[in-house]
Length: 327
Image (cartoon, rainbow, N blue to C red; front, top):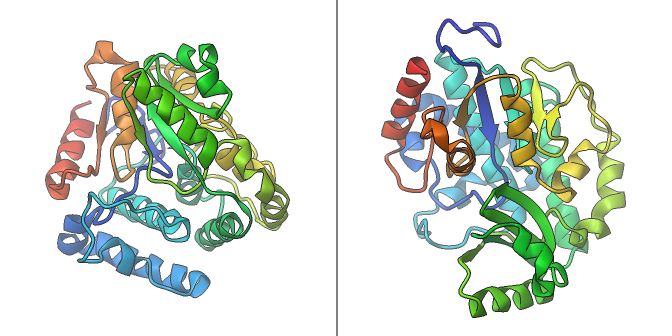
């Protein structure tokens, strides 16, 4: 089936890929045990990653001593873990004949989208993530990110927020994310607690999408200048650029990690072209949740996850297939 072919779905299909913060131990475990295609790709990817990283990522993801509720944060492992799960799940979907009209990446998910679209080779994507994590661990101060359930105007109006951290993304009208170094983020967190504002620390080690990453700019851009870019098999939609990327700049992935996540603007760009079906191919269904809030008039009928932290991987995937065919 060609990209954009509507014979299986009445709506153009968008594969969406999330980034840091969407990972957890045991993600996709049922699928790994029960679906030979998913398991095969995960094992192949693990072999490729191990050649560059020096250790198995699968042993960390499916470590039987680890519970889903435990923080899964070490960047050199989680970078690859998110990528592996998203890429392997995509291969299952493609094997079943599903073809996206667009692939959409958010933050680290831009790397997965690039690999799926063919813009960057699989091995280059793995090396890119290894190098990014290596630089972060060697040169970057520790920090974090906080998701806040409140109108984003709160960030601009409160010095406790804009004076201590940076706005990393606005997910929808009443949800935004701040990012920064540990000391500033702790002060912002104290403010949120005092005001009884719902918020959650994301399971990350660094202040992605903030100036906290500036110490790795030169090194990472130096690596990116060696990456080769290819014509895409599927149109590539970037939340760093808020639209379809026609040609890749050498520093694109720097902006994907450092710049603000423009998910809301990106979705609005696609919706101006007409309705789409948004399939979340990330580990947690995060982006599908965002869309249900942004497009409430549709009752979430045009989006669904393929995995969630709540288990029942096979049922969740089967429901996604059913929704796509009926969209």
